[in-house]
Image (cartoon, rainbow, N blue to C red; front, top):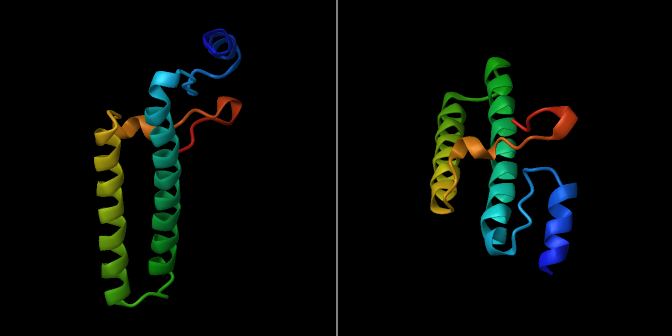
Length: 99
């Protein structure tokens, strides 16, 4: 198993943690990065809807609170796994950064 892990380290990008001892942290990083990506997409959509006038004041308030709470929870969970929230911006090779 260790030989296979060492072989993969030379092939996989640095962002992929193939260390069996850190698999939980690596999985948490991936899942939280995807949740943060979706949160940012929802936030952008909410701003477009707000600017387009398709939301009531109450809907704007509720959506804003929900998005802020989600952001706080993602950051809280990142810290629980020993991650800095800035680490959730994964590198995608030639495509650039995720966020």
